[in-house]
Length: 410
Image 1 (spheres, rainbow, N blue to C red):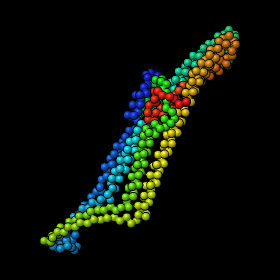
Image 2: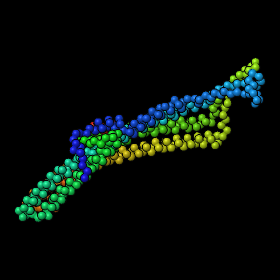
Image 3: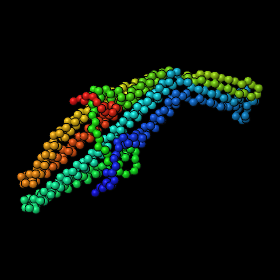
Image 4: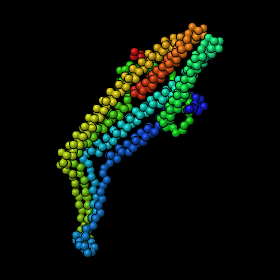
């Protein structure tokens, strides 16, 4: 049997503190920060000229002896060369690196939103597990009343032993469900620690009951806000921008680079030293199999980046619609449970208990109505949590807190 430590239920778990901790210590966020830092180092690197080349050499006449100063063609030689890419190539490389970094920065913000939504969802799941235990304890008290009534009737010869056993069985089944929810608490806490970057195994405590919050954007409003605010869209826009620079860079490869060479020859024996200067230019004569395919590849990559941007927009719009429909559905179901089914079923349970006391209602009816009441109360809180999780996802998608006023779409 799994036992939760005694202090697992002690203390309140603050959502805001957990969000701060996750944004500070989550391993994925930390890795993303390092990736951005590394991308920043590539910017000056991409703008830099190739390393210059220095040559030191000696030319001798004959193989038998060192002839420097004795023969006219024996000499020490020194040269230096520097390659210069065609004008504009380095600037394009720098622009590509800068766009790549900006894309990573935007994706980092998107990751933070995802982690925040994950923390909220786990928080609400953990809250629901504790809430279900509360409901089970409450219904355990109810079934204890039913058991006492069955024992009282059995004691005076008005009830059957099967009725007592039936009530006791239901009570033990609630204990079984309670233990299952305790196991869920341990699982949610383990997932929580992974998101928070914790390595200890101490209990987290009990989440505070969330306050019902409205989400008052219409679908069109939420979609427009999401598309304007989304860090994922900003990141993909930068990817499209970088892909455009890559196309321009590939087209620049049709133009030659050039290398400036300078040399100096030191000759002995009273002979004059010699100097030299030259320019070397590469000729892209194999453009049909080299530059041209590279341009086509870059254009294909740019087209792919644009399509991925459009796909991301469609996915965001679909996610907004899906979560808003979940919010609206949960609102209706919660209203049905709290204002209709739960009060009516509570009255039915009390009436059944009174009827069973007088012998007008059977035990099976009392138990059935009590279990139904538990189901309705459980479903209410499940819808409450699903609604809060949907709003958390909407806040992550739109990258804005839910508004406190306005007209909700029906």
